[in-house]
Length: 120
Image 1 (cartoon, rainbow, N blue to C red):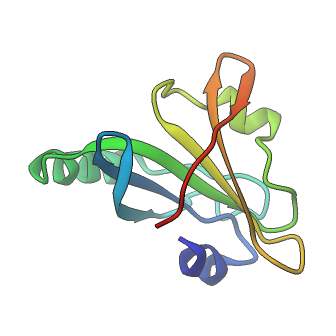
Image 2: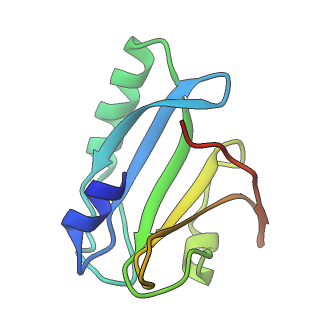
């Protein structure tokens, strides 16, 4: 995830995470069709292709990630407004500081609830 986000600078990177039992096992790099340093959008056809591959692997969508090249790792109002999956983790990787910073949230309505996570 870090390498993908670094490679996409100065634009936001985005992707999906799939796995089993809430544990991410597979990372799916997605194209940011916005090509913007402060927003992202995924192509619906690419999403459908990846969802098909996730299903073939016997996995489920467990997370959605994106980077904030110049902002802290907290959801923007736009991030919250477009969050449509209530049962997945939303991970934001900030590249704004001297070290990358990763935060995880569950987004329900207008609330972004911080979540604990473990990196393996």
